[in-house]
Structure formats: C-alpha cells, structure tokens
Amino acid sequence: MSHSGIREATEQLSAAISADPAKARAKNVPATARLTEGLKCEVTGPQGQRLMTDMPPAMGGGASAPNPGWLMRGALASCTATVIAMRAAKLGVALDALEVTVDTDSDLRGILGLDEAISAGHGPVRFMVKIRGNADPQTLREIVEWAEAHSPVGCTVRNGPACSLQIEVV
Image 1 (cartoon, rainbow, N blue to C red):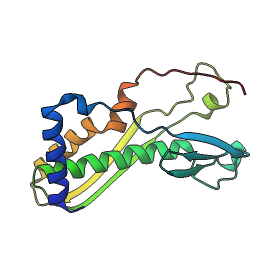
Image 2 (tube, helix red, strand yellow):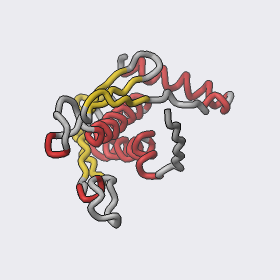
Image 3 (cartoon, rainbow, N blue to C red):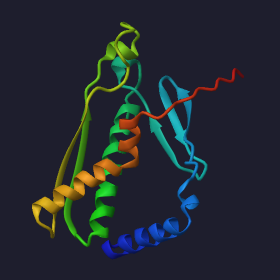
C-alpha cells in the first residue's frame, strides 16, 4: 500500500473507532504450535498462517528453522518498523529507508534448569533504528520514539500482561 493509502486507511480506522470505541477491542488470532519431530514445531493460525521453529543442535534441535526467541525479536523489529511507517504516513513523512534491528541477551542456565534463580527469559532488549525520510532529524526521531512506545508487540513485552495456563492431558 502506498504512503497515502496507509494514511487514508489509518485515518478511516481511527475515525470509526473514535465514533464507536467498542470497535477497538478484539480477541487476537490464536497461534497453535504442534511438535512435529525432535524440537521442530509447526505453528499455525486459523486462516492458514504457518511457520516452523526449531532449536540449534547444541540444544538438541536440527536448526531447520528459526528458533522461537529469534521469531520474538523478529516480531518486535517488524512491529516497530510497521508502526514507524504508519506514524510517518499519518504525519505526511515519506520514508526513503527504514531498518529496525532488535537484539537481546540470554543465559542458557535458565532454559536448561541449571539454576532456578536465573530466568529462561531474554535479558535487556535493544532496538537500533536506521531511518531516512523527507523530514528533519528531530521529526524522524520523534516518529521513532512515538512508534516504539505504541508498538503492540513492544508494549506487550514491556508491560508483561497477565498469563494463564490451562492443561488438558489427552
């Protein structure tokens, strides 16, 4: 979709939600992971979405697909890039270049259960954004900062929503 098409779509959606805020609430599409062999999983969605994950050989996997942590970083990077592009379009800023890189640290003792005091989760999340467009550097920085604060995936990671677990032994 073009720069103006993105702006038009987001303005129409914003107007519809402003007129009826109940339209803003939605249950997101679920993702279901099924172990296929070894540590390889197939992740599917209700409309035919599909992706694969696997772990590296050092963890017992075959490295035949990205690992779940990399997909999380990819989700953070792509969601942030998407919201930057949406915000830029809304403000009438055409982007010539946009690249978002996300990296993290981890401690394998957590996932391996070697030290219960160490989380299996990723450590600090670092974003690096390279951006160029038809606006001054300060405006581009403001667009990136606004988008990073409004990225749904980024907000979910930062705010740590409540999680629940339901187990069905079949």
